[in-house]
Amino acid sequence: MSVVRDLRVLLRLTNFRRLLAVRLLSQCADGVYQVALATYVVFSPEKQTSPAAIASAMAVLLLPYSLIGPFAGVLLDRWQRRQVFLYGNLLRTALACMTAVLMLASVPDWLFYASALSVTAVNRFVLAGLSASLPRVVDDERLVVANSLSPTAGTLAATAGGGLAFAVRFVSADSDAAVVALGAFLYLCAALASLRMSRELLGPDPELVQPRLPAALASTARGLKSGLRHLSERRPAAHALAAMTLMRFCYGALTVTVLMLCRYAWSSTEQEGLALLGLALAISGAGFFAAAVISPWTVGRLGPFGWMAVCAGSAALLEPALGLPFEPVPLLVAAFVLGLITQGTKIATDTVVQTSVDDGFRGRVFSLYDVLFNVAFVGAAGAAALMLPPDGRSVPLVVMVAVLYATTAVLLLRRRSRQSEG
Image (cartoon, rainbow, N blue to C red; front, side):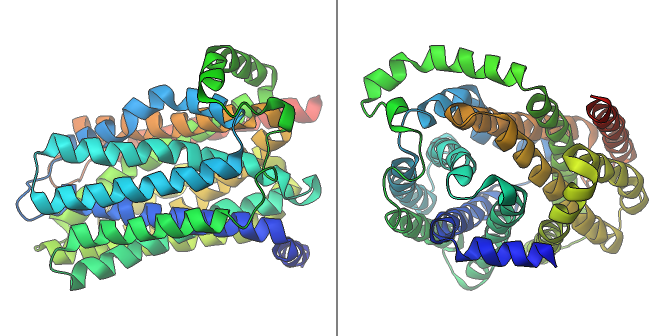
């Protein structure tokens, strides 16, 4: 199989393996940290969680840094990306340790959220930098396969980190703080792994680097404007980002639905709800893996927009069929399907952006990509808060999501048709 052959070639590339190691360790730590926060907010016995509380937590953790995300991208195009991975993960190590201490001290919620917010802020740099760096270690011919393996492997690492967090939480007395401490250790490992690459390897080109912070900040506004103009001139990238944002909104609404179902409708105890949520995450991770296997083949035959249209259309048909019963087994099947569809769309979107956007603009475009992800997810949580009853069963929400998937599929098919005619 050509996909297997290409994967073997990629894994023989030393610099690709080293960048992949940084991604795996970093995103595994993200998975650990995010599960710790989710269980602290949603599954703590003393908290009576509602959809509004979940939406508020997501807004506090994600929205402020959605406002500065594009500026982070400009800095990524002016700082050495290897250094971003090194110092960013070291900073996250310290901040995660602080979060663990605050959990043990039982401080007011606002102080806990401020600490968690700081970790999320640094995450904007690291994730966007990982995607922007990939074309520096892989040739164009294998970029689609690299986008299948690398981000999907990172998502699986995050899922594995989530599973590890669940395991630690079950066996540790001071469980949430212990889980966050584990995340801090993994962030430290990611920082050390980045030292295996040279400072110049991941770009940007030397003439674009501005090592001094004042010089980089002085050019941020100009860089942001030029980045948006560059994206507007790269219509395929802009259209792919728009489609991915709509599908991210759908995924976010369904995520809040499953959280509430696990917490109240399907379980009578905190531990039982956590076990169901962990199972849903694991099954969704299997869908991510399936997307990594089949996406290179489907993108090669249908094109990235054709594959995205198939993903959106499949979700429009399967999501209501599996979701409307509001029973565990059909929704766990839906978790696999939506994992495959969401990751398959992301692989195609990454490829379109990387091949359409110049290297000097990739950092800020991928930061904008990250911002759209966050805004769509928080918006979905807000919509779910308005529509979901306490137990998580909402027929209108499931129908709304299906309509959005169908609309996205139609728009993607039109884009593919215009591309073929051109």
